[in-house]
Image (tube, rainbow, N blue to C red):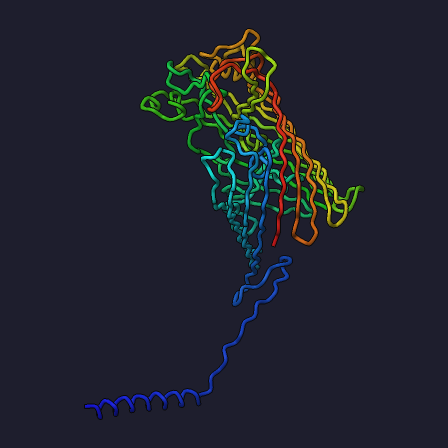
Length: 507
């Protein structure tokens, strides 16, 4: 048996050696090596995907920034713990972000087919919400779209937007006074090129992006709606589900001297139900009825001037906006403001300035109101002057102003202002000199200086002042969000100053 086993193993080894020798003698054709080729059709950074006629570009940036006395990306201290200036606030907030983008383009008989996507990996080292929250890691998707034959499908910048969105010269992501769509919204749009730099775009946008609040001002007890009569707001948000997309469009002239654009948007404001509990539906909601929907909208004019005599690359960017029932196209990040400060009144604990941002209000007829939606108006202006001192240093002076108007009189219950004030003062103890007016203005002014020691690496510092010009008068006893006590507060304008420092490397 041992001899047989040795014979079998020896025979197998010989066959393997023989087959290996025969294989080594056969000629083998080397596989062609396909090198990555530069694609110069669409600018720098594109390469052909091997084996295809599609060009691809990988890009992005890494950004690290810190804001003092503000939220991440230089949000002013205009609400929350920062607005209260309490001991739960963070004195600084930081964010580290890695953004990665993929851009592909293929030439076809219908024109270029393009796909684009950008993902952001974020680490917030501080949230501005006190020691109970140590920060968060998030993944965001800014833009994901396909372009073909003039059409764009996916999450892209609205046809209403300007090329600079909410960044005429600032670092802050919270410059108000106009539309900001830099992260994109789900839409479908078509762009036509008319030649000589003239184009037109029309689109349908996801309406949720353009919403703030629709306030149901029904009284608690009388109709089970949330009535924060002892707080710093009135009513409860009662927007219904989406029924129609926003209809948006622009006409643009883009030439060597600069850019001019007119944009318009139509937005449906539709309420859910007349009877709600704290803004949510209850078992009486469906049979209580609802207000009829109303269409609102906005318009914006934008101008950029290049080739200024102040220096190479200098420019001015400015846009002016008006909205009715589409307040987010002016107060673009949709905050409601609640800022606290000192007071000189002997009967008050502190001062407060607040402004409630809304697209419209309604007071249900079954509760004694007019029942119809009354649209809120807003208008604003913002812009920047951008100056290059030399190839390494640049400075931008930027600012914004905006106003929100509820319409009517505090003494006329048939108007938006009268209904808001009726809800707000219910069950509230007010001073003898109290006056109710939910209108407010905001102002912003900032300066940012950037240093670019090497290409695509920029260090910058930005200082920004924010002012809330609120229109309430006198004082009132109210329940502010904890840790503030239930006591009397004076109504007063408020200010905040923030400082942001940033390092960014583009690639």
